[in-house]
Structure formats: structure tokens, C-alpha cells
View (cartoon, rainbow, N blue to C red):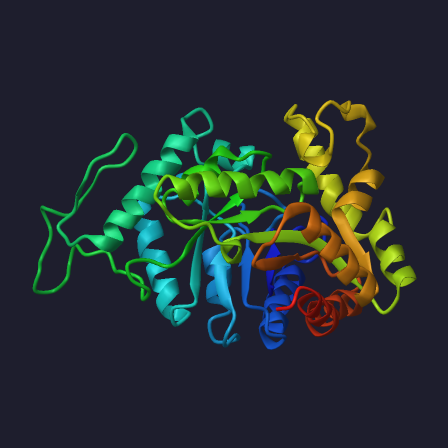
Length: 363
């Protein structure tokens, strides 16, 4: 099993933006030094807690600060940018990273972003599909372009100059395109099956109960079957919220602190779902459980794996028995309220927990 990193990120309002950006960068740089195989960051244009506004711009700041870790958008919210801008910017990013870029894509889930970009009343799923199709076409065809769509028409026919390259969208270093991943954030994700049928790989989100994470493998297999693609557990990434400390008591104090980063993370997620009137199914093992019975304490207790290296390894092995085999465990990044604990958790995860897990599964 490989170890990766995924951060949305989530920081308390009022914390200096310069500090959160520096800490988020430091986490990626540390992960690279510790041998993490890949790392992703999310993006939102209109959220003061999840305050990386462009995952691509953030990852570009890591180009010369990291050496081996593959870096991915987690995710690029496709309806919120013109496909030409997306294609050109991410092609450049892939070159800056020396071919280490992973293209994480989604329709985007933050209502205020959709409202601000003027597409909240539009068919965002259709926009997402058209946008990724346009980007892939720009990367795999030659100019002048003649791309027609419901939301975007793209051409450079009038101004294309072959001799100078004017009218040409640059291509990424990885051909025909960087690896594409999609994040599954709901039980029985239909989008995951569609993604697998296009050769893309899944990431299961860290805020789903294990019983729902397990459903993602079946949808991945379903999609692979449509193109005679052999489903490989090595291609399945699962994000988990983790806290590793020197002893169980230290980890428990940090994770269960009502004013700590773990409670803040899930409090914010639950609050946004409730504000939208969305059901709290993600946080239930039984869909028939009333929303009123879903408490913050119970969510944190069921979704965060924490403790000493041995306890975390044991709990992750039990989690693997529940959901099935998968290839990469993505450590869910949290705010570094306690910088020393935050950093040490990453260190212990890489140097203590993963050797125990891989020894146990015979890797």
C-alpha cells in the first residue's frame, strides 16, 4: 500500500492567510521528504475556511520545493473555468512539475462558488462533461480548433498562424494527458462508474462511513467492465482522516478537543450540509437513522482513526478488511493548530504506521 496526502484544506476563520498557506506548503514539502507517493489539494474561490482559491496555482509553488511526490488538483472544478484556460494552465503546470501532475476533476460542490461564477442554475454536470471533453480535445488534436458545445465553442481558425504557433493551446508533458482521477463523495457513486468507463481512477473521500466507501469498488468494477478494463485495486485511492501520536492519550485529546482542528473540520462540513438542507447520509452507517441522531462527537469518533502508531495501523487494517483492498491511502490534511503534533503525525504515519501495514498485508 502506498501513502499519499489529500487536503481540502480547512482552516479556522481569522487565522492569518499567509500562515495557513505556509503551513499547507510545509505539509506537502514534508510529505515529499517522507516518501509520500502523491499529494492533492482542493480549491474554492469563495470560502474563507477552505482558502486555497486555485489548486493549480498552489501546486505551482511546490514545483522546485519538491522532488518526487506527484501533485494533483483535488479537484479542478471544471464548470468554473473556460476550457482553454484550464487546458493551457494545467499543461504549463505539468511542465513545471516535470511530468508529476495528476489531473483531479469534478463539477465542484460549493454552492457559493457556483453562484459567484454564474452557473448555479445551469446543468453543472453537463458543463463538467463538456469542459473535460474540450480540454482533452485541445490536448490531443492539432489547431486550428473547431470545437462545438452547448456551453463553449472553441476555435482559432481566423487567427491561426502555423509558422509562429499562434492559435495553439500548449500540450502537457505527459502524453496524451496526465493521469485523471475523480473524487467520489457519495454512496454508490454513479459518476465513479462513468469515470472508470473512461479509464479514469477513483478517490474515495475521507468523510464517508466505511460502509459507503465499500460501495465505490463495485461502481469502479461496473465502469471498467464497460470497456473491458481489468479493475485493479492498485488504482483505488482512499482518503482517511488520521492522527498519529506517540501515545493513544495524546492523540485522543487532540482529536476529541471541541476546539481542535478535527472537530472544526467536521463541524464545518456538517454545518454546510445542514444549511443546504442536504441529508446527513454520508455520516451514517444506516441510511434510516434520523439526522437528529447524527452528532459531531459520533462523526469524529467513527471517521477519524487516531492513536499510537500500532493502534492506527491496527485500525487501518481493520478498515481495509471492511472496504477491501486498495492501492493508496491518502492522509487527510488538517489545520496545524498544534504544529508539532501535526508534523509529527505525518512523520509517524510514514515511518511507523505504513511499515506495520505493509508487513501485515505482505507487501
